[in-house]
Amino acid sequence: MNIFETDWYQNIKSGMNPGDNLRIYRENHGLTQARLGERLGGVPRQHISNMERGTRSISLKTAKKLAKLFRISAEKFI
Image 1: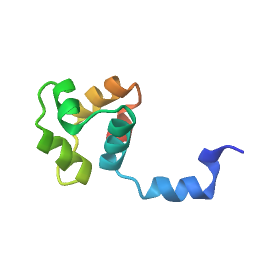
Image 2: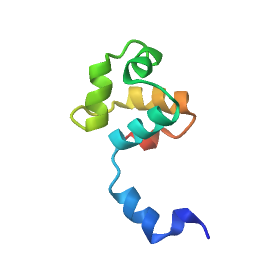
Image 3: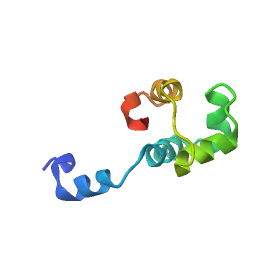
Image 4: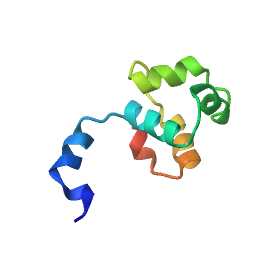
């Protein structure tokens, strides 16, 4: 069984937003918001927090940096 084809996964995925993905990838890589901001070239911790909460959008430029850092598609953050 492919988990990505299950109803459970589709329900979970539909409730996810770019900020949720950012938080999950950041935590899975053991990064604090401050450390991620440093890795992105000096993004303030508060901006990372706001992106994760959805009060600040993730720009295409930042999405590309995140994709490179986490080795995934930038679409996860758009």
